[in-house]
Image (cartoon, rainbow, N blue to C red; front, side, top):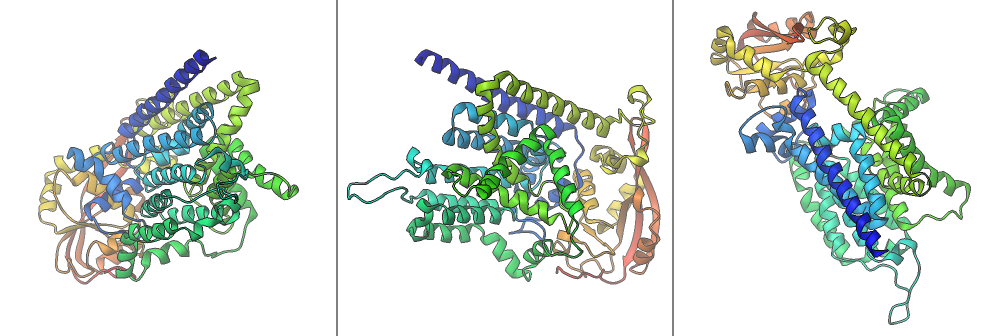
Length: 547
C-alpha cells in the first residue's frame, strides 16, 4: 500500500510539472506572436509615467508591464507580457497548493488542469499584460494564506468541537497569518480594485462562520488592518492629490444609467460560459450555485468551512457582475476571479466523478484542452497571418473573411509600424521637428509609443473630443505644448471623421497630412496609419479632469 502511494504521488507530481511547464510554453508562444492589444500597449505607457497610482487602475500593472522592457531593454509584445507569464505560473502553483491543503493531491491536480486549460484564464490572467495578472497572483496567494489560517487543523473544516485543557470549547485561534493575509489583500487592491471585493468576501466568511467570528477581537486582525491601510497607501495618496477621481470613475460604473434588461443578463451569462469554454463554464456555474440552491431549499443542508470560504470569494463576483449586466456592459474578465476561485469546487467534484468514471473525466479534460488549444492557435494564425482572410497569400482554401469584417485588423503590428517610421525620411524629419504626438483615442497612443521607443523619445498625449483622456490627463499639463508643433497620428477607421479634423484645426494654425503607413497581413493592406503635421498649438486642449 505504501509502495502504491509513493507511485501515485510520483505520477501526480509528474502531471503537475507537465501542466505547469507545458502551459507556460504554450502561453509563451502566444505571447511571442500576438500583436499587443490596445489595453496592454496603454499600460506600457503607465511604465513610462511611473506614479503612485493611475486614473483607471492602481500601480501594479505598470510594474508588471514594465518588468520585461526594464529587464531586457527591448520593447515588444513578448517583453511587456513577461511579468504576466511569470505571475500566472505562480497563481497556478498557489491554486494547486490551496486545493491540496483543502482536499487531496489528486483533487489539486484536477483543479490545476481545469485552471490551466480554460481560455479566459490563460488569456486574461496568463498571457496579456493586464491588471488581472497581478490581481490573480495576490488573490490566490490570499486564498492560500486564508486556508492555512482558518483551517490549520482538520477539525476546523468540519466545525467539530473539541476541548482544550481548561475544558472550554476551542475551534479556531487567530494567528499572525491574519496580518499576512491583510497585506496580501492590500497587494490585490493595488493590482486592481477587485481586491476590495476579495477583502469583503473574507469579512463575510468570518461573520457567517461561527468559529471564525473571533477574528474581530484578535489583535492580529487589528494589526493587519493597519498593515492593509499602509499597503494600499499608493491608491489613497494619489487619489487624495487628484480629488478621488479613480474612486469616482470606478463607482460610476456600478450606477444604473438605463433600464434593466433580463436579456442582457442572459447574454452576460452565455458570454461568460463561452469565454470559460462550455465544457468548463457550465460545470463551474453548476458547482457554484448548487450549494446555495440546496441551502435555500433545505435550511439543514450542511456547508463545511472550506466550501463556505470558497463561495464567499466566488459568488459575489459571479452573481454580482452577471446581474449588473442587466443595466450596463460587462467586460468578460470582470467576474472571472470568482470563477477562478470556484475551480476549487469543480476540482473537488471532478475528483468524486473520477472515482466512478475516471476515463470519462480524463476524456473531458483532455478533449477540452485539445479543442481549446486548437481554437486559440487558429485564432492566433488568423490575427498574425490571415489564414481565414480573403484575400490572403496564407489563406486556407481561399479564405472567407474580408478584412473589413474582421475586428482583429485594428490590432497594430508594432514591428511593422516601427519599420514604417524608420524607413520614411519625411517622418524622421517631422519627428525631429515636433515637440509631441497626439492621437484621437487614448488606446492608440500605446502602440505608437511602443513602435517609436527605439527611434525617438517624444511625449505622446490624447486629444479626444469625447473627453475620454484616461491617464493622459495626468501625464502632461493642459498648457504644456502651447506654441509647439506636433504630429497627429490616427488609423483608417477615423480617417474620415470630419468632426475630429474640424475640432483640431481650431487648436492648430495648420493641419496637413504628410505620410501614410500601410499595415499588411497576408500580403494585403488591412489598415492604414495616417500621420499629420500639426503646426503651432494655439491654445490648451480642454480637459474635464486632470492637471
